[in-house]
Length: 114
Length: 116
Image 1 (cartoon, rainbow over the protein chains, first blue to last red):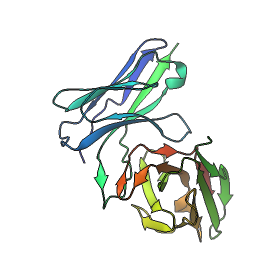
Image 2: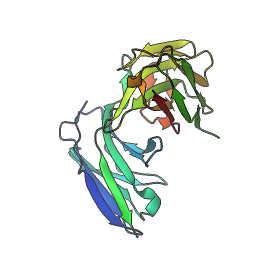
Image 3: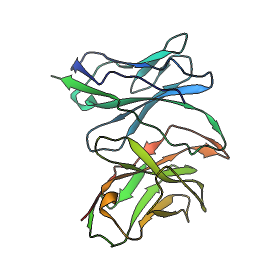
């Protein structure tokens, strides 16, 4: 599985867009990019995932570069409740033989400030 | 939908005591997982299940047992608790069909276990 690199921390003003980068330069063609977040003392929360096309859902947008070596998670209007650690995870879709477990790195601690 | 629920939320055990953590999901997911999270460390997979009646070992299975008698429930047992098992335990579930699974996992709120 491809290794990911994220900045350890970022700040964002409330109401502004939060753009969280992730580098995954060794990503393989069959590997997806997943984003999760963990708010303090809570369980991890799935946000979004994608393969090569940009994706959007009610929580966020995921922009993947054309060469797929990096991606950006965008929270369009950050609120104080978005303060959390955000994890970028790269995993291949599975067709047998895998445990299916998510491997969380250190992530980016996003602090949304009033 | 309640999603994934875990009971209890907190527990303190003495060394050598046993307990069972219960995880329940109402999303009809095939796959279920037990993770532990220690301070400054990421999640580590303890055991997982790809369907009712099946279980398998994860990354750190020693000292734990699991059972999946019903599709919606996944139980984690500690037969003889040790201080090294002090941790936060998370259960998760995901869609899976046959051997094809999704990494879109849904987590419970966690159980905070302290072993003294």
